[in-house]
Image (cartoon, rainbow, N blue to C red; front, side, top):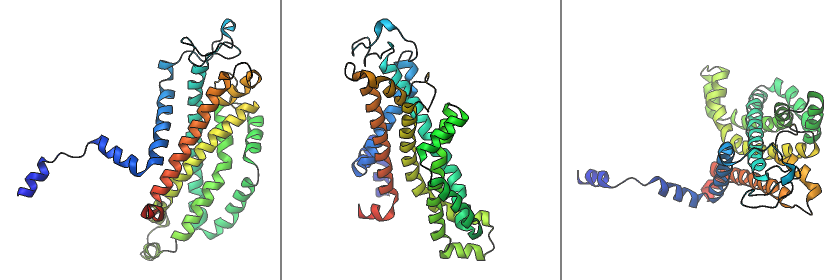
Length: 291
């Protein structure tokens, strides 16, 4: 009775304390997640904190950072700060959509290929053929054929990532389908769909989460590379890649025009990679036990 009263009187740990403990135990997740959250909040609040990224005023061209223009202006007099903030929207949209698209399709292919031996022989050869083509060349070819738009860029970047996800899921399924509890479910008469969804799918979630973070970071870099080459999103959309491409000619006299998008691109990719490394350490039982 006394113990119950004392336990009731003791306040539960505050959320801030729990977050502090979690951050101390998982510094890479905390740093990567915080940086990514700040960039995401800035991108979501772009209409509130930034001006028009498209309108240009030649009278303000190549102005250095000041109170009026926090990051200066580019060669057409456009606000670099506004274009950088709005560019984060395109990069995050492409990264997240490509990761979800590749994981969703690759998961289905990997489950079917790993469980059905006859399907495996055909599907994996097709995946090997797609992986043999360099991702950037395949993306450029698709954009050249289908036209330049955000949707086409997402599809063009996602297709080369699907075989990587499929092979990862297949490797997990091949090891899990021989375990005793899967054999027991099969012997009890469970349907294949139930075995895949209830007994095999949960084992693929931890590696898929980590793989999704790396796909997101890779997609952001590929999108920036395509935009830099002029084969990505249309020029009227402010993206970090086309900002860098348009500013490279003025690097000597106006370095601020290329510093902001380049720094943001590196920061976002670094934060996603840190988040992925932290999740890998957290979700891997062997590494978690060692930590």
